[in-house]
Length: 219
Picture 1: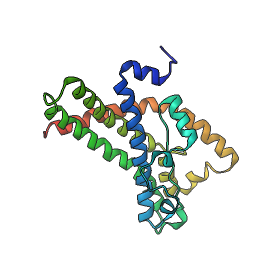
Picture 2: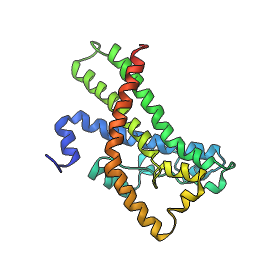
Picture 3: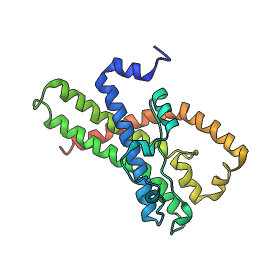
Picture 4: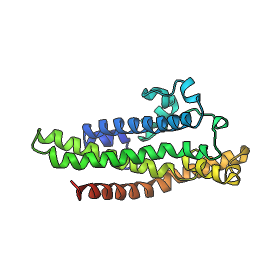
């Protein structure tokens, strides 16, 4: 039914699907934020360490309002405090920003590899229901992380793509400054989330299928 709650829809599909989605979203966001933090530390910024954010605890990375959004719409975000003034090199901010999406790309590759290995060696080893649930979990992990990689590279605040482009083109970064710029950010981001999000899901699904096909040629 259009407009129904995503959790109800996921539960109707399969309780295992709902659990898989929750685990994968939270896990992928934590890895994404830790990648930001680890790279920032390597670039000379110790704020992620002193703020206590170099942890796998999702409640540290995902703020309260983001949990509410996750409950409402099924997707959310995390935060990693950094101080770009501590970076050593001119384009370290872009490097730190790219580390998050890059971690999702790595996860997509690993999940796709695991899906192919599971498809070849998992069948017949255990009962069919567990085999199918694990196959769905690994495939969903591939798609989700491919989508997170692509979506976060869109150059619109607060997505990582805007920090990457802003680090190379300061004039772009200045577009979003000031009270008027913040209003534009909200309008543009909502538009991107509603419109581009669907396109990114389609591209992410295609990229995931290509990854799985790639590994299948070698295994």
